[in-house]
Image (tube, rainbow, N blue to C red; front, side):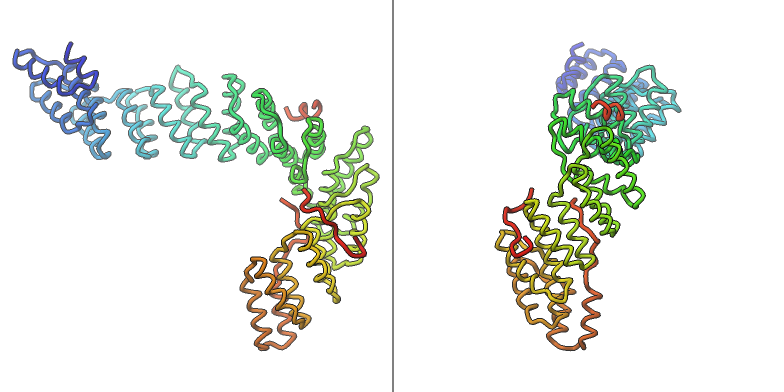
Amino acid sequence: MHLMEAAEHGRYTEALDLAAQMKTYKIQPDVTTYVALINAAAYHRMWLDAWAILDDMIAVGLHPNTAVFNALIKAQNACTSDYLWQVLKKMDELQIAPDTTTFRLIIVRLTSTHQMELAIQFYHTMKTYKVVPDVFTAMALIGYVAHAGYPRLALDLIADFEAHSLRRLDHSFFMPCLIASAEALYLDGVITCWKQIVHVFNMHPGEGVCLAVIDTAARNGHPDLATDALRVLRTLGIEWKEHHFAPLIEAFCRQMQLKEAIRVLDIMRGEGIEPIFETASALLEVLTSTELIDSVWEITDEILKEGKKVDNIVLQILISASMKLGDLQRAIGAYKSLAEYGATADITVFNSLLQGCVAASHRDLGNLLLDDMKAAQVKPDKDTYETFILLCLTQDDYEDAFFYLEEMKSAGFHPGYNVYSKITRKCLLADDFRYKIALKEMEEMGHEPRLDLKKLVRRKEENKDPSDKLVQAIADTQPQEPLTTIDGAALRFIETGGIEGDAQLPKEHI
């Protein structure tokens, strides 16, 4: 009794002394005595002593049982896996079958040393011995597999455990799988775990998990899941923000439920949340044809007939979508019709249209747009200046480009590399010595000329290429740019539910 107590509390030396006294008084130890001694050795990671105790047990004629080897496995935790295999080999030699504890100790050891494949192999080996894993074994393996980034496999293990055990696993098993599934954007796994955690166990994940679930719903086009996650956020007392709704719009767009996506913007405004252009960027991504753009115009007309106002963001998206397709005429038509919808153009719309003017080299239209900006009291930002400078460079007379460059700097904006690169190339084409000034100023602004531009300048200064070859070289190395640059229960939910700087462009058009 005293030996058992000493072993249980890890007093290994005392346990050995008591065992020696037993021999002195010729008290025959039993299997329980040796199990206690090996457990005491295991407590201090004295694996070699544990083997010696096993040898002594066999020497006195006692046949070890599974509990003895379970204690021996514990003693090998400080050793490499090779020693674990020696224990299993010894068990096989003595024809001792492993039990639930044996497999738990093995699987926990293997997962702690990141040997997932072997751990799964031993898990399935349990069936050969008709051993049912306990909950601790399942937790060790399923938790490790989920954290390792294999949510599908983790869920398969959960299903297998529940198929062979009378016990149902609780939320602590499904939460790691939910997180892993959301991180992998694995929709089926997210739905399975979400239903268990939220609707079966009535648990509420934190905001981070909900955001990951909403993101998965967005990427996979599942608005019902996204709205349910929004509901949980509100239940948690978390105030809805813009970034909570952008994925919901994306989920609707991936299902081509464009009217519902548009109505989300109204819900946001009803909640006091101001949407931005990027909130509905998913709508822009799906508008890949004129037919789809026309279908959204029809939706806006339906909204007007319902006596509601069309959100300004939607109209901006329609203009940008037309520009993305290279249809400047359609974009201008949409711009001119803004007043019919009670909307006005903002800086995003004007910048998008100006980019279209650059692609079409349409300086006159650019001038008219600048007039409209002034009339609407829309202040230009950095993109406005840069785009108009590029528009000036599309003309034979590009003197205004230098004027607006100086005005841009006066307004407190830092011209980007692309502006100086385009000015330098234009000057090289026109045999204009001011390319040197542009290069010098580029470096003063912290921009390092890229290799292709350096080659063009070197060819020009060394005069190795005739004019026509230089023109071709410039055309070949001109960076290709897109036509326009765009900055970066669902149905029930729907049914119930800065401008940088403050200076204005000068000169006659502003």
